Amino acid sequence: MTDKCTHDSIQRVVVFQERGSGEKKIAGIELYAPGRFELDVISIDEPLPSLLDDPENYLPTELKADLVLDFLRHPDLAAELLRRCQEAKIPLVATTKKYPASPLVATPPI
Image (cartoon, rainbow, N blue to C red; front, side, top):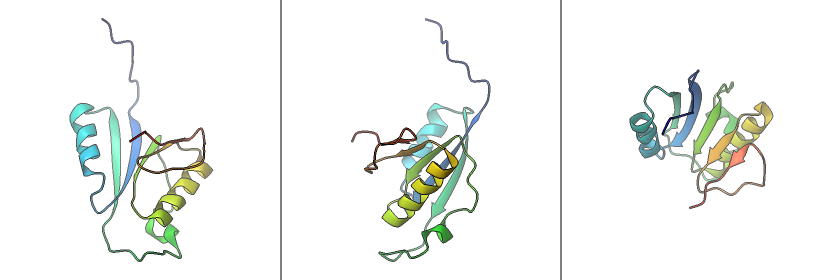
């Protein structure tokens, strides 16, 4: 069987995690797809209040990626990340979250 999938360029994947919530997935990507992705990990490790008035202050001002993975636990941060990805037309994969139907958001089944 021939692998017809060609990988001409490395895709830039930005991973957002909160207090290590995406570490196992990041390790899996690095183990099973070495050299196929340029991973940029944004970690938010500080304790957060239950309500964030300015969630944009916790995320980078510019978002450049081919794909974003969302492992954020705080709903205000996740909502702001979704808004930014939709605005920039960057596909977002968000596990264990329920977002309205959008061609740019994938919420894998549990």
